[in-house]
Image (cartoon, rainbow, N blue to C red; front, top):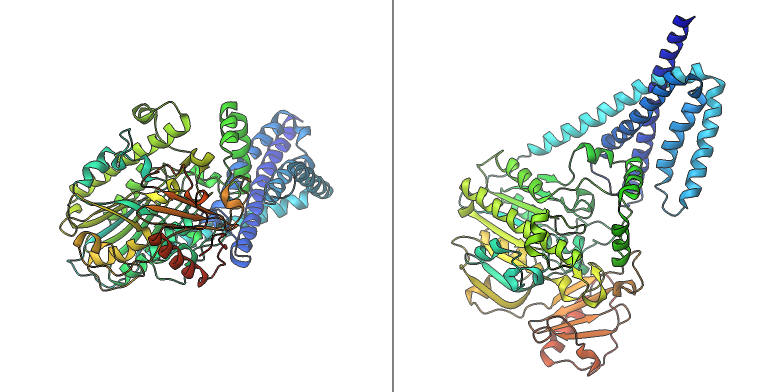
Length: 604
């Protein structure tokens, strides 16, 4: 009798595990199907890593394996608790709730009730013919595992093929080009630009051997359109890139240009949200590394993993952190998907691993560092170095100090590999950050200068004059044309090259320095961008802003660098003559563009 009971228990444990594996893979591939429809049919962002076809089912399998093991343990200790009906209810409820959580506009309680209803119905069905369902689970598990292995194999084969792309050989005399973006770093917080605390000591040393632009202005106050401009030389309004629209293929990119001239091209980006391959920026790169392939990333690659992340985070987060997040009204413009974040050391490591794979051709590489993007990343030692007592500001500036140190490590390794003297290096940012100025926190919410004024340093031994500071205001959209000219390749991208500014050559009339941000998503009412699209013009002295209602703000940032006094309130409709010319030129450009121009309330 005891021997028979043991045999039944073992069979029940096995049945529980098989059910867990089958349902994990079934729900995993169900989510894959949903994501595929969202991305390829509806054209929506899915905020999930590129290899989600195999990572998402694996994520479910990892979580369901834990639940299955627990249920198997219960089967040993309390056999009557693990009937086919109860096991099915638990597993199906968990999987269904995960899939339903992708529906953002339904109350969580309604999702739970609906998931329980589906699970109860499925449990009753299984209870009617448990043996038949067990056989179906076994056969289905073999089929789905085969499908999963095939998906993994296709992804690995694809990576190997992409890694062997043939390319025209480049001239040996052509330099390497390294474009470094410190995501979310504003110029105002760098000691290179006069910040009181020593946030960028290495950048200050490097400035003695480079050209530094004191008034570099980004084309947008957030990531995707700003990177699009850096890659194409186009203003933000010329690009399709928006909050929920990817960077399109209508314009050539730097990576494509350099690739056509025999360069091997690679990108290593830490901004998983808006610079991953899904958002369109990977075009032209032979190698594009955006998401980490780690256990944590696999777990976060499913709706179930995201649910567990939020549940655990909700339990573990301190009340102080909750109060802080509420205070700054931190709102993501995208659904709350999180990823295993890549840090500065990871980006450097991956870049140098790639660099060692071939040395016969020059390279064009793009590195995005996200440590200074909220939530800011820096160890305690950096907080002690730049701390002032304001936790939010201190964390941001500590992250910048960390980036500066990792930049030094990168230069040291390039020099040790005998690559530095033959490499053009650009250090810049896509946009800045507001730390309470104008009662705002974060970015993408307005067009004030802390969001637009970014660092720009060009290091190119023997190709640019050392220790040069350019005082004139410039746009980041001018960088692609500049890199092409400094590298000495026969190609063209829009924008006026910046070389004239240090060579003393006569310049044609430059285009106005435009910056733009489109109406925000899910933003608080007090955000200026909530009203509608905004645009601005910056000159070496003035900053002119138009909001979605056509209202104007005007600041003399030379005399008023914190933009505290709005000159537009003093003399409505009146502009200095040189600024009037720039504004009229900007309005003409925007009117001819693909999106409507907010009407200003000033008289011409």
